[in-house]
Image (cartoon, rainbow, N blue to C red; front, side, top):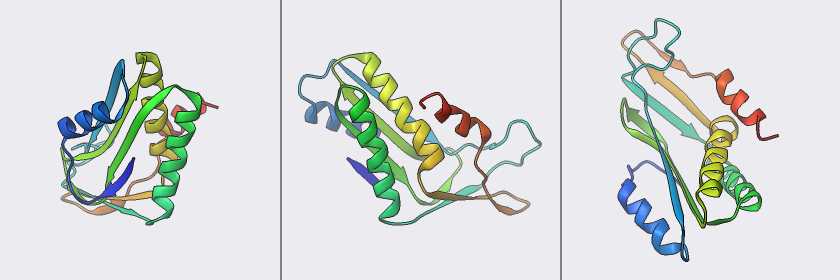
Length: 152
């Protein structure tokens, strides 16, 4: 399941949904990403007040589906879910959820990490960060691009 939404999500509800949809899972792996207060620890970044996320409806969901389908073809996954929020989010708000139900933990961990790595680098989301000083678009990070190289 893929969802791009403005509304927050409940991790417990999403976990239970995966557990009930999967037939006899041996593992459920989840990842929840939060809006960071400090985006770049290496510079003298200001505290993030808000992050505004835009997406291209249709294109974004298709890319997330492609990422999810690729993970399902690589690992033995029973069920998976990707939720990504858009709109204005405050520091510490939940921004993304990836959940994977599998028979074995290794498949669950690898599939969840794969989906997050490709979501961060290839999903068409645009982020504008607001601080006390200014608003600026957030550029791709080298660490995100490096993360997907290990899968190729």
